[in-house]
Length: 387
Image (cartoon, one colour):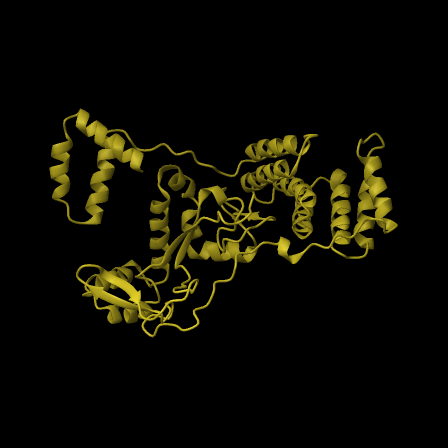
């Protein structure tokens, strides 16, 4: 967005119109007038941004999966390369049409990486998803075999039903298949109980830490410790001051954000709803920009705002700053929590008329259930050891 403004300013100066436009802009009074005026200028000077729409695309998914395959089959592959292949397969999953063969193949390929990374529970999830879709019968045997080995490594006894399924599909492989001998050898070892158990630690399934709790909440604001007091004056506006001696490391404020937005760099490694690290992610059924840790998170995200964002998110991300996308998300989320936009506008006007009385504003904030004074967070999980 900043680049568009710079380009528009440059064109106005070249046309010697910047003073005229500035004077016209000063006469405007409402946000609606600002927007219409700006759009007309952009159209007049031909700077409407061109957006690259990323839609579900079977061929794009296949191309990304092939890229992952080349990395995964590299003889010199290491953990970093496994993670790189994992990312390619995850993007292939996001690009694949819903319930397509491309989606099934991408899930299956990612399960192979998760197996190598010892993410056995996540590996089983991807295998089950692939088998529930249009996965080719002639190569199902290796998936049942991989699932059986995951179960064994998780501490289970060999699962007869899974091994029988693996045997059934392996028998269908032609004798000249390069992998048939190795797969049959692994199957024999499993039936004989010679595969080493390697129980996956719960710590491997990384989750965000739970929010700490305020031991002694402030009477004026429960999210703040009683170690601070909320004050107001003309010089500093609303601010907080120490109300008692504060110990090193003492937590002063904890509040769950009203809304969140995941940074683009983590679109395929973290759940867009709960922000947890996710290995066996599932994609949005329509767009290619978000993944989730579960169906529950996918449905919650859809109800909150993604139903509105889904069809336009690629346009927004291609032409806007993160803050602009966040503003749109806040507007959608806020309007959904009231009867209509007029009710929201009335609440905003009410807040605008408050005269800096701290106690009143806090009590009003509680009454409006957080819709007006919005707490926001753009999630940047740099402190996590992630992909």
